[in-house]
Image (cartoon, rainbow, N blue to C red; front, top):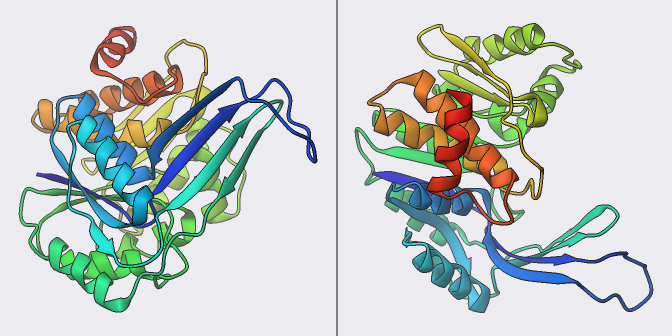
Length: 302
């Protein structure tokens, strides 16, 4: 079974305007309300690709209920820890001449509620896949990722980590099955600016030396690179298309990689191509990638 964890989910209120003027009334030309958070995005795309998953994490209030409702619409099972006070945060995404984001704080999460999540994760076993992705709210300890991986390190679970450098580097000692930094994040981890695929591969190998098994590096319009636990490396240019919405593209790549890996019985090359096609399909669409969109792009990659 595949499980995703979103520590700090959100309802994303997405608006488009021809022009944004501070201090004035602005009229939107498009609006939508979507359940957000990296793990939630992964679960939705997995469902779109025909894979079952269970979304875990913390929710509260009316916004938390809306996230659960939307997941059900996408045929995604959820088993969130319900918080008694507050509400799941609301993030405002303003798309005008430039993109502006206003992100909410999220509810308080007590130690008792943390233990509820740990109890859920303790039930996972050999053959399961766990995706940990996204930020950690201020009401959780900053070593939350480490706590999860340390508790699960002997369970033979495939663990995927997609998080910012401070969270990611600290968990490499637990040998996660897959990590997915982008090329800029990879450079930031080592204080360098990476200018070529050869340099990206060189520093991705350093992450493997630190414990990561498979390293998937997204490079936006420049494509992607995969270094496998078996010592292989693959490069794919980005499929051709028009960028519509970059939100969720990286999460979609993770979902596509997992789907390709499962469907091919462990073929990393096919998993990589599926990941690239799925990430691009989301980037070229208003919403998260669907199976027909992915299949169309997959033909251009393979």
